[in-house]
Length: 300
Length: 316
Ligand SMILES: [Zn+2]
Image (cartoon, rainbow over all chains, first blue to last red; front, side):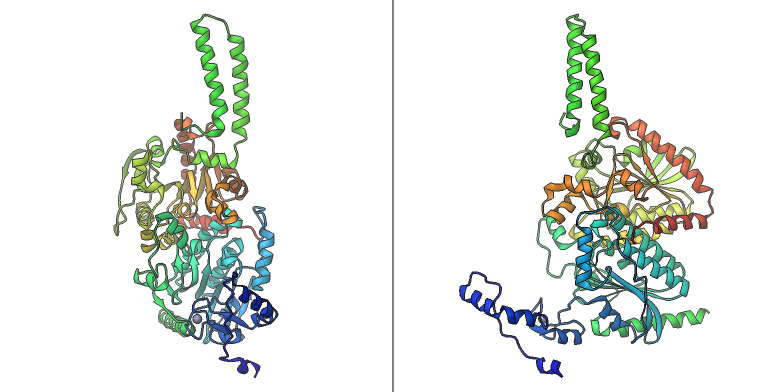
């Protein structure tokens, strides 16, 4: 296969950082056309700088084959990774953001986000099977306006939780969000209350909620459903916090220590049950759900 | 006076001028009553003009005014026998949130609120009304206590936001606020929320899930500060006034967006000009609404509360 031919091939290193360098500039221009073609196939690891074939990254569950860096995953890919093949039934895919505050440029931003992510909003919800166990899954889409939560995200999560109550199913939410969406102002903030209230009802029904924190989980999402899991899992090294690192640095006027607000730090401080590598997430979630179904059989 | 708000300056200048004229006419026994009458007329018109056209940014200024009454001042005016309780029974006591028990007319209640300082020293003690996680956990402890002993909970909201510091993160600021949202949505006793000053984002919301939410006329409530929004949008915090114009943070905006139930009137210029009047207005509102809420079965109370928060949001 064509893919196999490209595998492990290394891309010639061209400095594109130093624009003052005359010879490099010439080289860059010569290579530009070729770059455009290659950019569709290749991407650079944000951590180690390795040039990777996009097909390879996908194959490796969106991680860097060299340094194990975790790329952000499109919501659909995540769903494929967690649910059994062809079991996913999507909910509320028609729900779209309005512009309730008539916020300048918001319509344009929404359109751009939709083009970039190929999604209509920053979350995909639905039901499906995890190794045969039925569950409701909500996956945030970081490529849609940084996974920010506005009315649609809040509404879709709330409806998914209500559906779980109706169908007596567990809920799993994959968080990836910069927080509340400012373009919907106070309405975004109120989605925190709404989703948390729905989770309280789920809890009253004794249905399990597993929250999975991925990079980044910050702001209003952290201060609502992300931190409300009966079980809270996290991917390694994900940024997780209430305030963003830059805001904190501005407030306290000092640099933050290495590793601050990363999954490992939160686990150490007691806010995360377990850090699970991406490739083991499905298995781990399945086991947790399986143990919970055993519990409910006993009481039936 | 240095505490005057910028937009009130013409009023104050005219008031001073009238005062001078009155003094002059008295001392020199000159009849200036006609001139004074004209100026007083002008003053009335000016006040109407200015106070009826307060911009969102001017409201931000009023909401943050250093003479704006704080939670403890309202508690003193509205309730009797307030006893403050301290601590979250886990980590410590956060002075940015106060709480305790008191009596409203004849009803025992639990009162909780953000507490800003009245001067620099007090503000340092209160961390400018920006709570740490233990503040939210103290509030939740007192709410659970209220539920156990069947007392309605009254919340006063007035914070620039939850504190964004190293230790706040370490002790789980996000978790503390999230837990309050969840627990408040299911607390089996009435919760009434009064936004008295700044409703700063998640830090305000962490005390604001309830059966009734009202705002003082010139208070504000928003997802981010105008400075924060302008620095994100335009990379320039000094454009906060423009940000305030677009972000819909006034009591009127929130009533229109169906986020709050009621606006409580303030005197022209803000509550600091007449605390007694505003306290009376709040007290009347609380009394009316508590008696309605106490008549509901717990289940109905919680269903209504869920519906209330459930319905917020606008989408296509
Ligand atoms: Zn790498």
